[in-house]
Length: 443
Image (cartoon, rainbow, N blue to C red):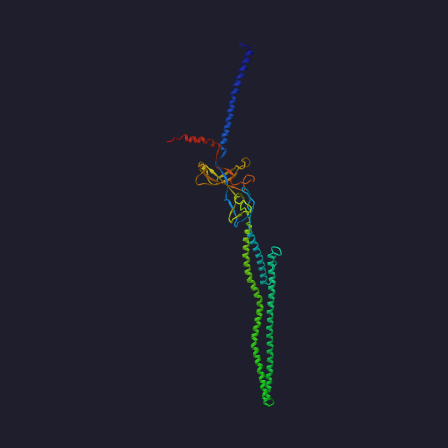
């Protein structure tokens, strides 16, 4: 029989071993429960977490418009070349200068001709209205051709007005002379009328005296002759009066006509001069355009893709293409290649995320765009593999590249968003494909 102390020690040891065994059994159970809860959470998250479905396509940036070829209409001598291939230019930037001596000479001559016609028009307006000539300022020094033309017209106006004054003075003198002759004839007729009355009374007295034999018949005949002569003179005056009145009217008409004719001629010449001025202004505009074309400027913002003239002092022919500018502003297009297997997912209007190899994705992110075009058929690449060509439109003014330009030729990766599904559906898709193929028997 065991002593009581040893029996209690043995019982305590057995209980300790049982406790250790129970602790070892409980630890795996806690791990299993925790793992089960984690799996449930992951499956729940995977069942609801969305995942975008994308079609990836490699491509490059292309301009939305054709390259612009800069030409020179007239040709000439190259004075300077201000850009090189690869330079980025803005619309209106200077590309080159072309010398055009003939164009500059023509413009100078036409500008002088224009100034002369402007002065002539001002002079004719003054003549037509009777007002003073409008003040004109020559576009050049006092001894320039334009200044001399203005002075010439001013002197011509003064000379023509002096001649007009002289003509008017001569006409006025003629009117005065004719009026004086008419007044003199009227006065003479009045005197003749008085003399006729007196001569008739003298004739009557002589006739009475002849009846009383107080006068001779010769005296009566002399009195009759005097009366007849005076009446003839009155008749002659009456005949001359209408002619003199007509002469006075004619002289007055000529006096008025001098100024009217002067102004009418001025108005006729003014119309012709204004027509000539309009023609010269059009020619001057053409000459000015030609001179402005001696500075070749970029028609668009973009990149200088090609420079066909390299020699300062060289001669270019009319119409030669000197520069080729690839536009970079406005809408930007990414052209990419898609595998035929992904064609069914694509349709215009789908959102696209574009990454550019020139800009670090981690720093700049992606540019957003839209799928605008999918080719109708496949086409072969350099290795003979078939692909569909797609085009993605980006907003050239809004992109995440911190103001850095998106230039044609940059390599791009386009991720076309064709839909979305859960993470669980993505993970189960291989099983679904396997189940569909495994449960079917080919015949």
